[in-house]
Image (cartoon, rainbow, N blue to C red; front, side, top):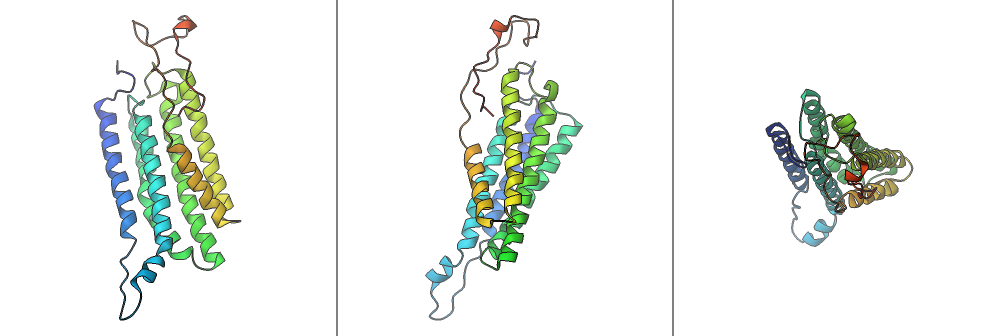
Length: 234
């Protein structure tokens, strides 16, 4: 049996490949910030200040991608097995991650523009993050459903708490997308708030207890189960 938090070679390879995609995506963000070129008496300082939309897009997307990476890593600590469907879902999820630098550049170019252009740019940006959240949630639901791919020693209360958290987060990303058509600032603010919430350390709790003969079964005394996980645990 794979220990709680352990991984077989397949899941380790999935996470290693995923880490590479995350690293490339997060590095591409800085490439979109071009070095200003001044001529004659033009102020370099003013040109640097004028790049504030690029700084804003970089900061938000770096925080978002970093937070998603941390959650992806933490969830794969609990996924002990893999199959073809998990591989496919993870690939589609990573496709969304690799796409994030594009709407980030779009946001930086058009957020100072007209209201129509700004609304479109924020809608594309928030929509990309929304789709990313949807596929991340689907990936987790598939792996955790009926203990399909996660370690069976994990307390069911913990799994349910994680599922509620990610479904709720996905719904809030959908809300951020809807807000983009009414208030670009509110949409971006909600995206930042979500990133800050999900970047918080997970509540510390004991690992799910395992009976000497293997994972706990429903027939075993409830007193053996560890249930003191916080409801907000991921």
